Image (cartoon, rainbow, N blue to C red):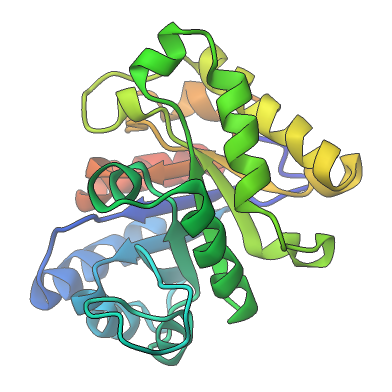
Length: 255
């Protein structure tokens, strides 16, 4: 982390977990544990839980995000939610391009870009996910792939809107598998992302962008991962469903 020039952000991605009542209970459990955080704390929850999450987080330092958004403002898109709808519901952040959306639901680099642009135009902060599959890492194309994903995702995002962009590097082979990239592997790819941002925009612009690690960061490895200069936080899956574990990661980012 380099907190002198950019924010550290710990964001939970709850995926398809928790009812509204369970959401209220978990956030109430978390609030005192993260109240003194010296980093931004975000919980990205299922659509059905947004109202409960926003209400439970009122008066605390926890911000609420969604897990996806559509690129159109309205229309015949059954099952989708627009960025403007999220803003109206009290959401501040939204994840775009998560590997599970790419793998299971047909998201492409192009649609990730469209979702990201829509989110930023609506005033949301987009957590834009990039990362490689195991076979791509084994083929030695991780750096080129992640650079390309970053470039496409940010097309149409001007430099003065980069304060609404967080990039999350999530090696797909390390999500939900118990495997984690080493701190050095995470640093290497996060540095590639920052160099790509410098190429697209400018070095000073790139220095200000928060880049998270999103591959099974947990209470046991957070300290080491966050010790690397270009790892500015985490996009946390399973550990964000346990208040105690999540608070340990927040504390690691608060150092």
